[in-house]
Image 1 (cartoon, helix red, strand yellow):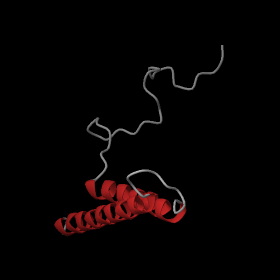
Image 2 (cartoon, one colour; image 1 turned 180 degrees about the horizontal axis):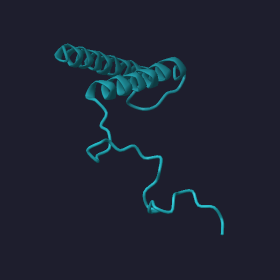
Image 3 (cartoon, rainbow, N blue to C red; image 1 turned 60 degrees about the vertical axis):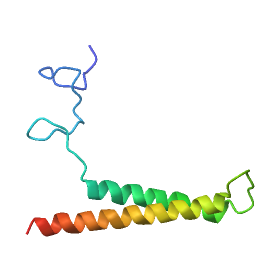
Length: 93
């Protein structure tokens, strides 16, 4: 009989790697960290478009201009996340 990856008392449909809070629900991501992450990724994608698609031509849109717009949206999301983190930290005091 091969060794099992779970304890015999645990059912096999419940993986050990899952994180569960004390109330039985999975942990939620705060809106501030979500906006910071999304803003950073959006900004970096926009920066990559701006830097590396200068010679690419497609109809209607210029990829460098799309990159600038994505950088602006990403910057706004990062600022929103910072404001949310600041107000969340201020409300704890």
